[in-house]
Length: 387
Image (cartoon, rainbow, N blue to C red; front, side, top):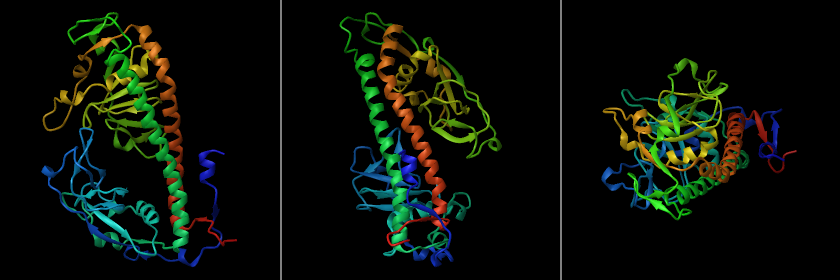
């Protein structure tokens, strides 16, 4: 039985609506709210103890999580974006500092913790924006929102079904992180530390294996910028994904790439590296890197991840890097046969990563389809004692 089939066990279409699905209650009957607290920038760094959460989740800069030696959450919390990324819902399951860009939601005794997390995600809290120049929502606006409030045992069953989907998604994501770390370690061993090679020679970039040459990235890859796509051509539904500088965003019915490529963040999240292994639209926030030889695709991806392209920022008010900054980078170039032997080692790892990513996309789609139906009573969970 597939993960998707298992996830659908234990559901019935609602035929006779229970009383608690007949009328809604204010969120003030579900939870209490308080704002997080301000923490000065000088008290945050990557080498401290507790992660700092903002309105869009964990705060990170240059790939490192912002941390502090203080905490205002001891074990778990649900955050609601209050300023900035308003209405964003995140689950905090560790000791942490919650900033004043968030509200902290605490469920009442007759409300399940996971249930309120999933419920909040269905309520479009961003539409409560009361800011003028800066987006903002208030505690009072959130508490006045209405929702159905089934009994605690029903809440637990609903949350359990949704949590199982999220747990499977999380497991797949963690395995993928490990698989990519293995691929990175294999690349480091062979093409950065040169461990398999006995004879090294001096070059303009340092010592490299005797059989390697030195040249810039343009010898391995062709570069071009992605293309702008109008907002009206973007939607949640569409045949092809759109890739921006930080990965997948919306979808569209158009495509501008048909074979595997790699994107380098050009504007915004500059230097971010993403694999694109499907037909897609690559936006003008990206540089598209196509290997001259598709049999060297994963090698090229791992090579690009070695470099901090962010330091080539040529923007003034807006971060930006150019094709020239990327392709002018000098690298040690192995013989083709060495690259292709390495490709055979790592290809199974990346194929498994892709399989798990595709499974996660299906699970996420299923979760997002089930969520509003479960929270409205349209789809009913089987609770012990139901006939």
